[in-house]
Amino acid sequence: MKISIIGAGGRVGSNTAFALQCLGLGREIVLIDANREAAEGEALDLMHGGAFTASQIIRAGEESELDGSDIIIVTAGLRRQPDEPRLALINRNVGLFEDILGSIKKASLGAGTVLLVVTNPVDIMTQVAVEKSGFSREKVLGLGTVLDTLRFRSLLAEQFQADPRQVNALILGEHGDSMVPIWSTASVNGVPLTSLKGYDQQQVWQIFVRAQKSGAEVLKKKGGAGYSVAIAIAEVVKAICEDSGAILPVSTMQTGCHGLRDVCLSLPTKVGADGAGDRIELELWPKELSALNDSARALRETLRELDSRSLRS
Image 1 (cartoon, helix red, strand yellow):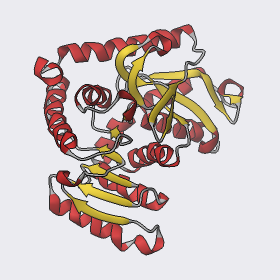
Image 2: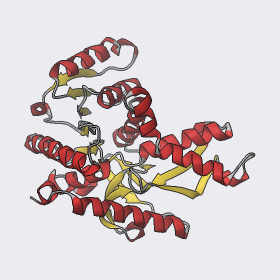
Image 3: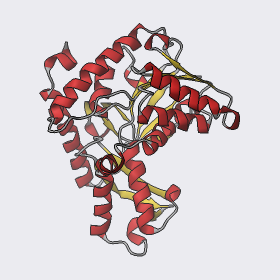
Image 4: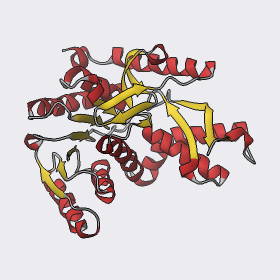
């Protein structure tokens, strides 16, 4: 299986390649970046560790070498400048992202190729990809709230001194300010959070708030997240490679689950070799469903505010 990473010279892209190498995912990993030298350096560094990891070809490449990719991961994006309005950053990233999609459309790809979008704002970019990539909507996945869910579970595990692998808690909706914590199903190995020693409603809400703001916290302390994002990406790639049907909160174009349509956001989704499978309609509390609809409205409002050229030209 050939996996191409666009934006592999940056923190997220290079960390993703390392995670895929450690897990032995993909026979060939191609690192593509506007800074070719950086991509070559990352590929060389990874190749040096190959004798202790997996039998893989890891190399730098150009966007013209996307031919034959089974999975294309797009992590490339521009960072927000000081005092820059959020919408201005979105417009700049949409322009860059559309250029990348143009290169992807020129590539010789099979009908089974899956496009995984990581570039932020990921739900907006996923929608751009669905509308402009030429891929079927099931073949376009956004990382969505997989990372937020990962952070949420890890922080809850720390709070309750539990094995993080046994924490079952979801964040759905937008990967952004309107994300929705799903308390109704939150548990540790089947035990509801409310039954755990030391449970305090206000305290667990603050844990969600910290998960929601974790990206900004890491950005302030070390310049941006990398390791955890890569782990989240690798989990999605693993589900595709193994055709496992793993249920993950990826961002996809919604077609009716919970009454949501024509907007990309995260719901529990079966992920396999064909991309996005069934969306799982949970029995949500009324306030959770209301918050999910609010999240969809927030994303639609952002889409309406975008330059008409960005999505409709």
